[in-house]
Image (cartoon, rainbow, N blue to C red; front, side, top):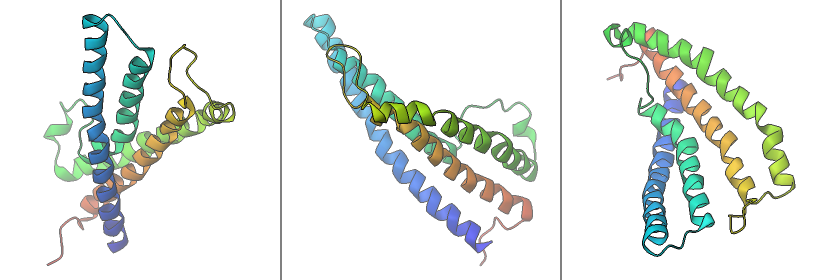
Length: 173
C-alpha cells in the first residue's frame, strides 16, 4: 500500500504543478483576446496569427489541464444518484469508471491520433492561412501529451479509490 501512496503523492504533486503552470495560460489567453478585440474593432486591423494564437492557447489549456481538473474532481458529471451514495460505493464507481472508461478512452485517443500527429511532424506543418502561425505540429503533439497526463492522474485516482475500498485511506498514526 505504501507504493500506491507514494505514486499518489508524486502524481498529485506533478498534476498540481502542471495545473499551476497551465493556469497562467488563461491570463495569456485573456490578453490575446483583449488585444485582438481592440485591434479589430478599434483600429480595424485584425491578425490571423493572433486569432490562431487564441485557439492554440485554449487547446493547450484544455489538453494539459485535464489531469489537473481530474485531480481536483472538477470534471462535469451528473450527480443525482452519485451524491447520495456512501463513500465506499462512490469509490467503487470511480474506480471502475477510471478502469473501464477513462483509461481505455485515453489509450484509444493516443493510438488513433498517432498517424495524424506523425504526419504533421514529418512535414513540419504550419498554418494554411496567410499570416498564420508556424509549428502547428507542436500543438498537435499536445493531444497525446494531455491524454498521457490524464492516464497517469487517472491511475492516481484509481489508487486513491482502491485505498478507500480496502480501508487503507487513512494516515497511519
